[in-house]
Image (cartoon, rainbow, N blue to C red):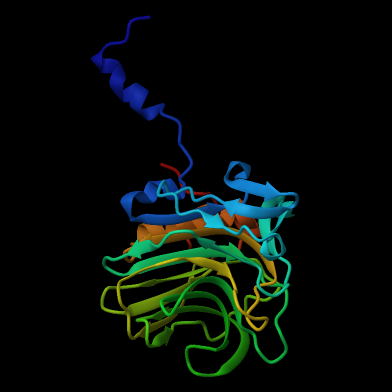
Length: 275
């Protein structure tokens, strides 16, 4: 059969949909960790010595000390593999080199579940960059109330913090898609399972630093649970890309349609995004 120009509309309409992934975020992507991609995991027995970055920038997470390595568990979350912090002090990983976040703000999203907290604390570090970024749980919400285990995204300038956080959503015992954005001017917003949490304004500064998973240096801020996926971007992610990222993460880790925690009005509640 010979194809002519008149066949182009048919060929275009027949193009199959391709699943959207964080790779579609382009040059803004700084870190992409995917525990279900076994090719990115280097094992030391059943523990993880390296978790490789899929952004293309080689911002890999490393831990050479065996006793401080996270555990790798196939099928741990919705049938998918996860990197798990077992709750022993000083389990952590970090980038070997610094990561530049110099631009118009930044954005970070993570999928995980924290299974327990130290008594009267509710503080657990998932992702941390010293005095700049904190993703995890906190004991004070954005309104200043004591709420152990509240989802928190905290942005800093190096000398002060802006607790964006949430007032009512807890991370404990529930697999969450949690994250936040901050503009160049310091306006920050938290998102949990596709819904907007709190919005705050405060100090923010560009920075270059190492990124850390878990907590190094004590037992009061241990994560205790699976870490499934982390996506970090330079710049404040736009609404359409944020919703695509939420849809991608929700269908992958929480399930399709009614099985995921996205709100009913979310554009990707029923089906994951495609390109």
